[in-house]
Image (cartoon, rainbow, N blue to C red):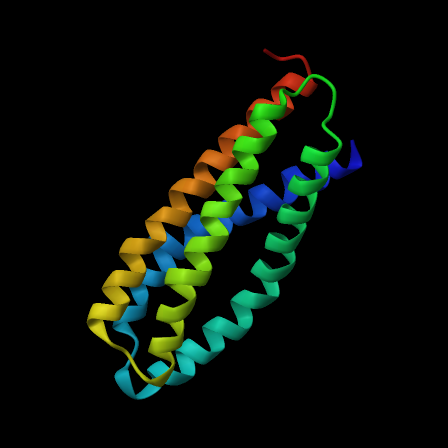
Length: 145
């Protein structure tokens, strides 16, 4: 049960982070003074890493553990669905958002920024679905069907 509680905490941490980033932080980045943008981008990447790296690592680690040691009452397909959504998130981060952040390190580029905001919806939707999957698992474990 401890692993599941950690999983819930990590998933909901990332669900909250992605909503704030997608709805508030990324859209507001276009208003940063161009002379300060490189400093802003560098600080964003350093500071957000303090939150997302541990939370994403914990979320992935506990998701793998739960697939390996499924809690009674939770269908294995639901655990695999959650893990599959994590695969989408990690691939999107590695192949899309990460490289775009890298391209923004040397200054604001409107087309790159627009693509970052647009493609980040992949992660936002996937983490929203993950949050729903975790709530469903929690309901099953607590017998709230």
